[in-house]
Length: 84
Image (cartoon, rainbow, N blue to C red; front, top):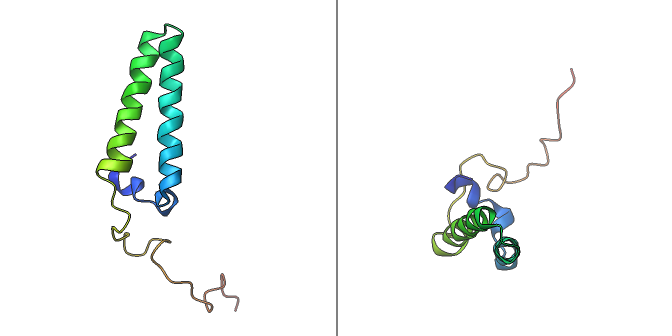
């Protein structure tokens, strides 16, 4: 996931970011508990990346890309394709 994708409005609520990272940390703990070292390392890396992207570098007030659905106001006149 690129940095631009990590700024999607879906990730704006704190509880969503906490739930995602917590699930991956739980998955990693399960792999380590079962003795699956490779999967444990892999999921721990994913969890570390999630912490970095969603808590350390995440900016909930970052401007969205121009023309994206998150910033474009809804236009009532744009209700689909025009018929001649």
